[in-house]
Amino acid sequence: MPHEPTSRGASSAAAASVLEALRESGLGPRRREDGKDVPIGARGARTRQRLLDAAGEVFAEHGYQASTIAMISDRAQVSLGTFYQYFRDRSDVINALVTSYAGRLLDDEAGLAWDVHDGRPGLRRLLRGYARAYAGTAGFSKVWEEVTQTDPEFAEVRRTLTRLIEGQLAGQIAAGDAAGLLRAPADPGLVARALAAMTDRFCYLTYVVDPSDPPLAPEQAADVLTALWVSTLQLVDGPA
Image (tube, rainbow, N blue to C red; front, side, top):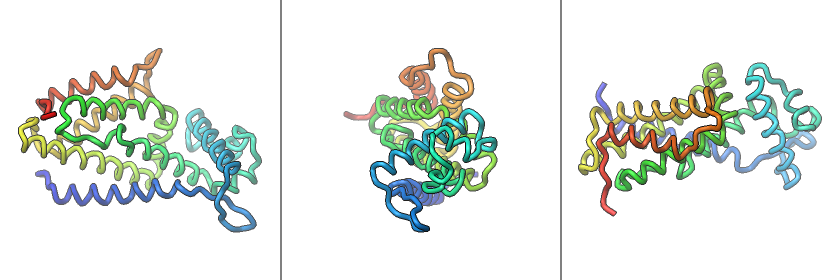
């Protein structure tokens, strides 16, 4: 099917809206007190973060489906009652972790902020940021893969994030092609999907499934990926 910029743009806008709401949902964490949700103070924030850190470790070690709230509470060294002050269930915890994960990908250096006029240096910064995000969240990335394969709600979150990344890349590829800064070998949307999928799978295999010892430095990953992108797009450096 031919690329449709208007449709893809609408999808990207919708994706951005969903992900922005996802990020905002984590800006004001609360806890249950006397049957009501109340803002948490500094001490509560530390307890909540300890629970999130523990959950990330437990999920990474045992998988999401095999993990229990008791395991998370034990790892965080808090009671079950304390857990339920901050989270309703496992799904609530994974949602908070996904919010943090999505926030990393939405950061300026992690997968979305690329201006084709920045040429090869800008592209390398983007790919280095994406590799850094994967390297820094290797344990959760494994859990993310599991939950998006088994839970329809989180599968939709993944599709949304994917569409956002692809939409941004497709727009820059189309703009670069029109400006003579690159030569897209096919429809910009398809090229964006292929390059984004290659990058994501490369990082997943490199930092999650089969990491080297020591792990590949994100700078080296960026060098390999940048060479492949530049070759595919015939990218040239834009004006200073």
